[in-house]
Length: 262
Figure 1 (cartoon, rainbow, N blue to C red):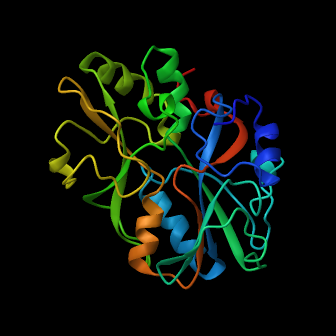
Figure 2: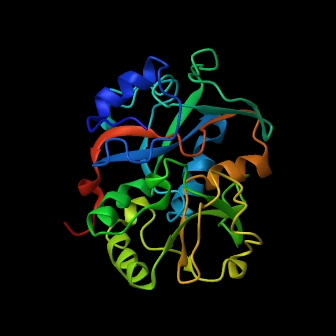
């Protein structure tokens, strides 16, 4: 993991192609974003999907048609500033490049969605260990049996991220993450994974398996910004670009700016 606190410096290293791994814990005070890039013909329906599903898809930034720069979030070129991308063709992943310069065109619209990493630093500061950060792995993410609210051609199942916590820390985590509704907010579920359709908690669809879940641990699940990737896989738009799960866009916006109560 990059031991860097400055988001601009982190992006420079990523832009140069020298880092292409997960970004949890990098520039921890700053907002990281999930990425979804679509042809303009899909833009209104996807914006509506985000509006109807704010828990998994909290929209924190978007670009104009054909514009790869996100000045409201920093000195960002979306074509180069994500460690790894996924390029989708009709619901299938066809490439996982370090940059998307060859795929960019003037018809694309960029959406940036909030990420649970924004409340992880406050959790850590409260003494709650994040297993995936400690182990330098990507947080485990799972498809559930929970339906999102459809919009236009976009529909599908909710994806959640999971962190195993003690009972005491579960209560703290609910209180703390509730302060961040712009980045998924409070958990959507805790306890028995089967109640939301997860058959094997050691086999996530995205990210890395948890290293350990103690008998005394509570699996705590938050709505996840990888949900659009599950939706893209199901609904098969002609073309789409996302981030590779865990490889986020690091912005210049402070996490504290997204807290409902400072």
